[in-house]
Image (cartoon, rainbow, N blue to C red):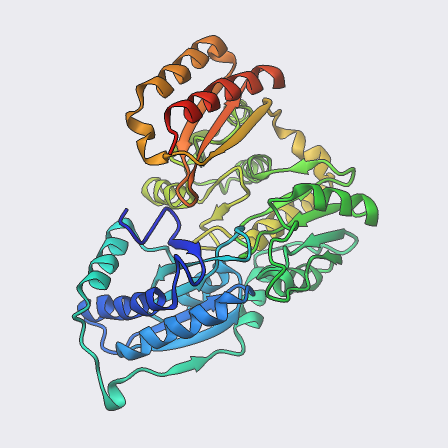
Length: 446
């Protein structure tokens, strides 16, 4: 990856690291790249989450697209997978989503989709970076300049698409939804109500400043408490751009992405719809998931951390289901990227079709105790070459043996190193994390 793009588009503090000037340059570069591919006047679908800086960055991105001779089709506030879906099901040449997902309100990001609704590849992002650096793209004039267009039906069409993926009636289910005051705040309740569920909401009143503020899928304790407070059957929690899902049972237990993926994989396997009899996950996936899949005779295809790598493996192997522990799940039968609302519809459909409460379904796997620590303030770029840190990793791996594992990696979107350990007991996992985290701090000091 280059200087602009990370593992999930470009992301940083809005108006500092991610400036309007950069957004404008990226808009111009995207259209220039499409011109190179033979498209004379490409249309770019542009959506955003509700955070304040999104308006500023959208204006800049639109200016870049139109100044290069492309038309910018604004769909307003919409989940990231909604932008991908509308791009794929239109004549648009590409799509762009302005969002920093689960990050705080001060951050923002831009991710791009190709005409088929898939995120751009590393090679395509590198080509965009080269065009941004070149600064010699043509500047059309007169009627060759692009225009800003609006699509007021985008939300309704996306809601209709999501509702169409369910073949059951959710009447009688009482659901509480945490929208993270983000892009799902409007869409998610509409979809679940359309399918017949009784829906109660928390954090579904975005004001541009409260996105992800102690709300959403990165604060699972919120939805757990809300389920108990409202006496709901299921809790559904999304992140700022609604590409993730974390759930809660009626008694307030968390159901993370690993468990949801296991529930969906088992159901699809029993229905005969799990392509290749396999599911794709990342190295962060709990060992309990892998053991559950072994018991079900479902192959697990393991990838690097990041939904782009999960998707790459899925497309390469012809799989239709994959995901991450964070709740970023991909259903290629109905979407081209992770979709938290779609995942919830699929999960709720299993609850309804089996007649089993989520608590019972979640017993498909037993989690090994897992501890994850983010070590900040260190030089993550030196991690690969620092032997003393990897010596600590090997020592802990030997101590845990076959009953556990450790994982150490630099974050692709934040300035930190992640240390994860799984073991037979929480104490063993915590000890391993503490030892390795101390080594990181000692040897990677900035």
